[in-house]
Amino acid sequence: EDQVTQSPEALRLQEGESSSLNCSYTVSGLRGLFWYRQDPGKGPEFLFTLYSAGEEKEKERLKATLTKKESFLHITAPKPEDSATYLCAFPNSNSGYALNFGKGTSLLVTP
Amino acid sequence: NAGVTQTPKFRILKIGQSMTLQCTQDMNHNYMYWYRQDPGMGLKLIYYSVGAGITDKGEVPNGYNVSRSTTEDFPLRLELAAPSQTSVYFCASSTGAGNTIYFGEGSWLTVV
Image 1 (cartoon, rainbow over the protein chains, first blue to last red):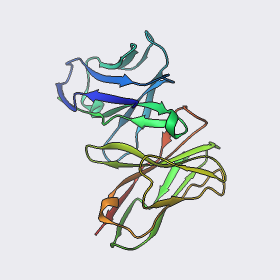
Image 2: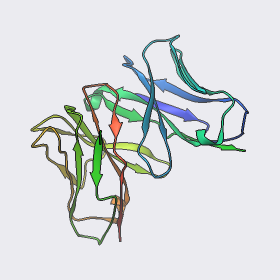
Image 3: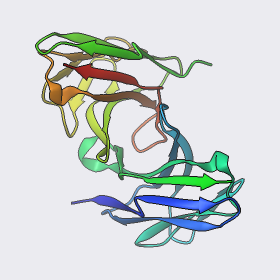
Image 4: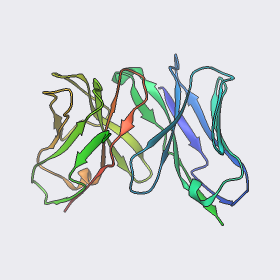
């Protein structure tokens, strides 16, 4: 069964303390690996899509990378406003390529 | 640009009641989706539509119905509400299969 697994479930960082979130995947014929950010009480907000191993994309303090088995979301020198739940997802061929989401990593950045 | 708009934001239902969650998008997207999100369980696909007049079941369709009479609107109907349907519901849309999905702000539903 195609799926993504995210780790850790929760992560607490001090402001400025860099770290990485992991999304491991087992997907046949991957048609993109998506990253979203979700703030409490809000809908998920699109961050990145990666399509091939070795690809990297950056936005402010976030950089997403992709290998043949995993994707990482690297957070450099995080700020409290980076606190959110980060979700990874893949298009599921069994449901019209709707995105199938992982359970997310809840990130808390303290001052 | 409003994007994806859901109503109501909050609703409390009694067991056995019915209701419709409304969803409209102004991006002229062909594809629309309904997800539910429960604590610790992630987002689960309920139904999706690839265009007006076409709908299909997702992972957790039981207890729900949808219709897609226009490109803009994709209402979700709950029949005979049950406590298990207490959840946060998200409507979303995209330009096509496997493309970026854009979400609404969510509808919080409690069944008591």
